[in-house]
Amino acid sequence: METYEFSFGFELGCLHITPVHVRIEQLPSVIAAHRHSNVSYEIHYTRSGRGDVTIDGKTRSVRADTLYVTGPGVEHAQRSDPQSPIIEYCLYLNCVLSPRARTDPFFRFAQTHFWMGEDGGRVYPLLEQLIGEGRRPQSGAREMAEALLRQIIVLLTRMYRQEAASAPVRNRVPALTRAGLMPIVEDAFFYRHSTLTLADLASLLNLSERQTQRLLQQNFGKTFSQKLTDARMAAAAQLLEGTDLSVTQIAERSGYSSIEHFSTAFRRRMGCSPREYRKGHHPH
Image (cartoon, rainbow, N blue to C red; front, side, top):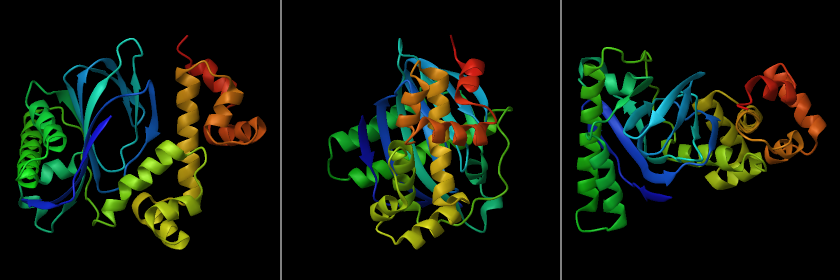
């Protein structure tokens, strides 16, 4: 994995953009279903490999040159073929609309719930150059990064307008609330769900537990316990679908101290036992 983190924001028409990072990595075989905050966008470009992405319950194939964008609150999960693993660029940014948004040409970018298509050599060179700026810092790196980010958003806005089959859009984008903390929150639930506690998350955010709960409610509409259960159930479901691990092993990896506790929680959430779920979803 190679990551270039940003530490600046800028205005583009009606948009206030706070870029977080651009990353290139080989994806693991399974990335559990997850959602980002209500101001967050991810731009995914597949450089090589194949797999699929599930967006709000609908699965789509991914291959080299696939470009897709997930907007605020979009649930998405990814799978990468172990025989041809996906190498992906992912640009993560936060975006807020100004009051004059509807008359601005970039209104469509912020309002797009989900978009997918082929890049055709348009966005990929800019993502590669962004990574290069982080890999080999030079004078004017910030200005160059901002210029590249502006070009990416302009290109995507044009692509949205050109595609007749653009996805439905949301009615509004809420005001930015501690946007810089969102990647920390999301990474914590995604990578540490098996052991994460409210105290752990509060410490990572340098907030009190009460402030952390308020942050989760404001940005995700859920308590810590609800968000943790979401993360654990999503991970368990992906492991049941995509691996041959035993239910006991999956319970442990998902953060449950006993298979009984795991099975009860899983049945409550999914309406069936883990074994029944696997029988209906296992690829073999």
